[in-house]
Image 1 (cartoon, helix red, strand yellow):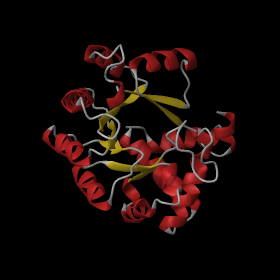
Image 2 (tube, helix red, strand yellow):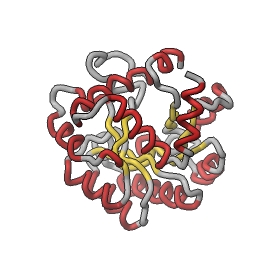
Image 3 (tube, helix red, strand yellow):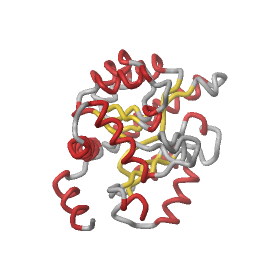
Image 4 (cartoon, one colour):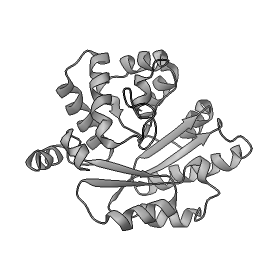
Length: 243
């Protein structure tokens, strides 16, 4: 946290991918006003106990949980349980709507099914996180009402298509993330990722979009607050005071 604050990262969203991890992290961290939580069962963890949806629903009701996920579909690493992944994804969407909390969606080699389920379940609030798909997928996600979030992958040498997509995304629908502890941006690639590196991603995308860093930081903060139902003005004032 100290390193993050030194690089102007003032608020962190801890995205849990297993319910057991969520319980450990919230117990370890406790109540802090600079860390928020998301709770979900990653598609690659749907067989890791506790994986029942009642347990997810109980945790989703917490006030410090601002989003549902990570959830979604991953056919790159696992294809033999597609139906089970899809069913869990649908249930996450329904829980997100029940509690009026946005989705954090993981999709890999499964964009068509991901979009199809989002549409059929009438999901209209969330983000496609650590986005790696093309402009066409981004367009459909934007049409549904979703945000697009870019991680350190966008700095990788072979990410030209992703950079084109980032240029296309409107400023009012773009988010940035580290996806720590994985996918550290250049020049830290290969090292353990950390929240402090968000500034490097912000600097890179600001250059890509042709805007000043301060502009991108303000817009992505506003987008974050809008998506996760935070008061933008109060959030910015609070963290400016504690800087």
